[in-house]
Length: 87
Image 1 (cartoon, rainbow, N blue to C red):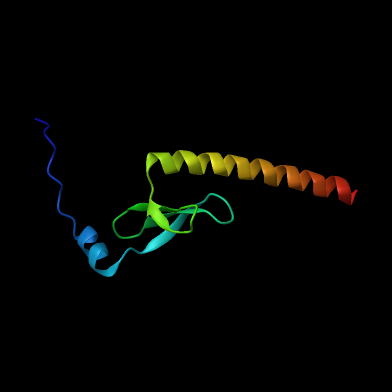
Image 2: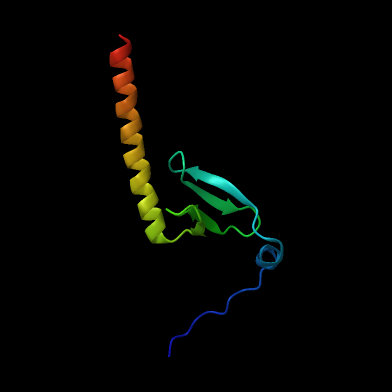
């Protein structure tokens, strides 16, 4: 038998289930992909490849970290080219 701890009751989760989440951007991964956090219940969400919101799982966190590093390298390289072309 697996013993799971009972889930505690939270008014903020009830509020969000009735009225919806109040999402605020917690991290800009790229220009088009962001991570969000609900101001009421703390649930984390992210943009998917299709433009929908999904719960932020460890797999999405890993993917977003890779996308952020890839995006930053491309931006840095683009800036260097602009400086070289301007001189």
